[in-house]
Length: 390
Image 1: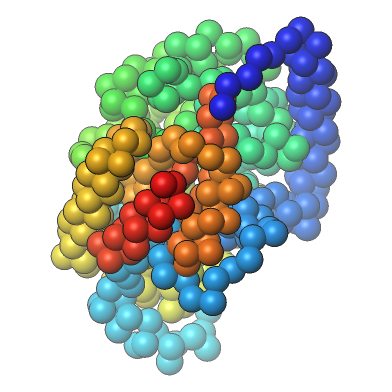
Image 2: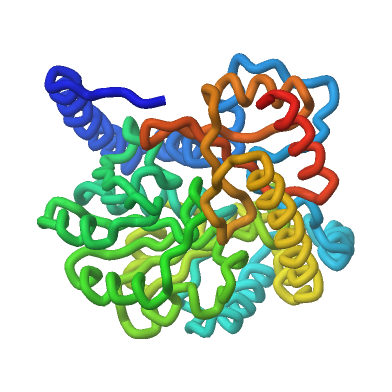
């Protein structure tokens, strides 16, 4: 799995990186002016599109036994959400103004911020796209490598900083790189694909240090799975007046991957910067508004999902340990571990067994990212992995 980098390769990669930055800057400029180009960017940031792209050339099985490649919630939507959807169908001939207002109010109460600190989106991918356009026009977006956006160098002007040896964000290195050419710091917390979470006090100290120089976007798509989501999130920094933009999705804990609801939290002046490049919730359907309100109120289902996820995750930890595979401890609904074959071979062989996972390659190593499914799905994964890895 190891390799050496000689000076010629290093120079070649440096030239390609510079060319990629120029191309990405040009793409962002076109995206700023064209909704069609923004749509192309949004598709590249969409989990569904990424999943389709990842499996090009891999034959699907006749029966999918365990869909563990998209970090979806296999236990939802809840019964209360289903009932809200059914009840809202009769109102789907109306536009969703009231539903939008009710949802914003509920989210603001939940997060402890004023209502004008909330911007809705049809999933967080739309809001992430808007953020990349708004800030990519102004300079480079500095991020960890790998992280959720780090594979989009052709479309986003990225400056990537390698993770630490513990596969955590190197916040000191990021702070040391800031020189006025960056317009935004992007941090996924918990990170995707590693599942690692930054300690709240560490991230808060970093925000206090740098956010007056450059805004910090904290993508908290998986924060609900953290040990202490209320205190591990960075809403307190927003309430303290810091230049922080938080993105949230309801696709994970709330099981809304197909219902498409997300939101941003920030001071109004930050939301104003990204609002021209997204719908602001006007693309969310009336049934989805009703379902989102029901889901946020359904705390019993949230607790059940978290308990089920923890049990399935612990089973997978135990299996990997017994099989001799180390893993990165995860604060999300997936986990990442190094494998002893090429990622493409792993995906193909597991798919032939009816199991979907995702692959990554970094730090001179091939990795498997497996979503946490039901206990039955994790047992199917364990059986299939044991068969192909033996």
